[in-house]
Image (cartoon, rainbow, N blue to C red; front, top):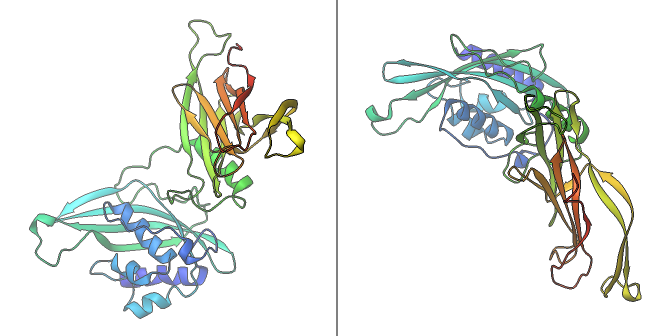
Length: 350
């Protein structure tokens, strides 16, 4: 078994591990022993952050190298790691539960060359009620990964041993994720404010009937995916994709008015003399946005400066399979107070 683990470590030492060559201190800190797959994610969090003592500590009696020094040296060529886990199966034996965890890893060396590995980990949990000090937490018992010819999204083993098959893939979500990462993967941050990697959207299902549908016609479904992109001093940006069975996946565009704002003495700190709409444009970015499932609306709120006394905000209503602008408010006064005025109101439109 030790030879198998050393072989896996040697593969990683040659290829590196990771989705990108990000700095170790940028990787999320995950230290979670609440489940078998959480332990595996914690292991690669530690490797990502080059916290090798912590990584070593996730293994139980069977260690992945002859000693800690050899373990650390095995990762001389590594940088970071992206890991996915599949459906976990378990089996009880002599006071312990053994969990089998399917694992797929996308590995990138420091030269930027990526490879995919797949295999299984066995995680052991000793019955806590029969233990005496020192307590043995859930830990990795053994594991082996091999190079895979599949891409990262397809490399996950269906199961380990007699474990259950993985849940069916959410194809619309996968299509939206690929489209987002292909377009914005290099423009957006690497994780959201909660520490989750980008590409993990908030997802919603919207059920409706077309305006021309007959009473017996079935409902249709549109999927909505909100992807975090970036956080600045006071504005957060997101990108939305929608899916339906006719058009597939496409990015949602937000209509915004082009404005001519006139200030007294041409001074933006002065009194607002007039706001005129001179045209319209669309944007793929949504600022400080949120989706309300009850009203089926997306709202945006763009602060022009930190105190939010000057801003623009839009409301986009879902109807007939798409989102359309129904209200747009402007606060152009820079007067220290929030006093927006509505410049577009289509709320009564059919």
